Image (cartoon, rainbow, N blue to C red; front, side, top):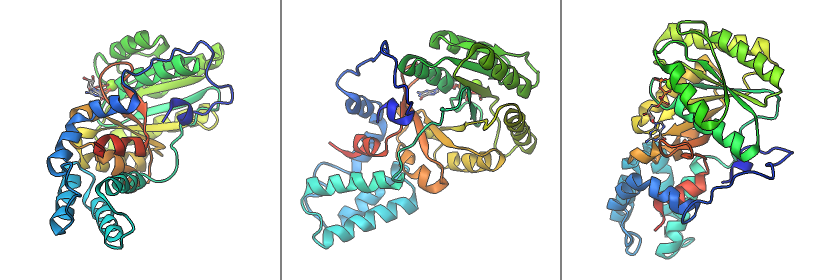
Length: 325
Ligand SMILES: Nc1nc2c(ncn2[C@@H]2O[C@H](COP(=O)(O)OP(=O)(O)OP(=O)(O)O)[C@@H](O)[C@H]2O)c(=O)[nH]1
Ligand SMILES: [Mg+2]
């Protein structure tokens, strides 16, 4: 999926947009980034798995999907459906079976194309999540993509006033992304920083404010309450804000990530998931199951530590990158 599909803007990208072609193509690069998950799947799902079809075939497929963290329920659904279709003669031949598997896996993530809602000016994007999941890094990458691909003026708000060095870290990313930063003082009120950032965006006619927030454990009641308070402050200050609330989940934490997302969704209305560190895990299958489990779409995925390692999530492309030879 292209960035332009994730963020449809009537104006379209500016003419001077810097398009970096991906060496070998997008799918090839995604495959390479997901190589750990691919390898884990391939261990079971060898090229010849669908050459001979018996009970063992389906067991091995099930095993492979479970190992890749597609989740027990989703795996059972996909495998029994595929088996039934094959037995009914609706799908025949190894290649067609593999193709149908890709389709069924992609279908787990739902049929709707995910969108980032940034049509208001300014729009506020709040980024939340447990400590160390990749919030600040994602903000840097997203700010760069919005600026470079859409010509949007972005202001990042250093509303993680809690962790030492958090402000400096965001400053470094803002510099890399070429965006402005609004900062408060360490230990200060995060709501006030967002308040100031919105005012700055209005004054400068900027398009998007992206607010970093302190990492917090989803089990920590006081901190979750603070987050919903920050959200209320933003909502009062700016119509419709926050326009997006993205929860950042570290893919390597597997099913625990689902628990985190549920708790955050209770405290603040979460509009999308960013799944990070997919390059460092064999559990990439969670990207496909997460939307069905949570009812919240995955909108972006992180596949590395560099500025360009964030991409719109496309379930079919993702399933293909995981499965297809
Ligand atoms: N491999 C890989 N590493 C990532 C990705 N996203 C973030 N990281 C790394 O994860 C670590 C934590 O990232 P941060 O952006 O600081 O995470 P955070 O959620 O802001 O952390 P706190 O502010 O402490 O809660 C850093 O070392 C990042 O480079 C990714 O997609 N892939
Ligand atoms: Mg951070």
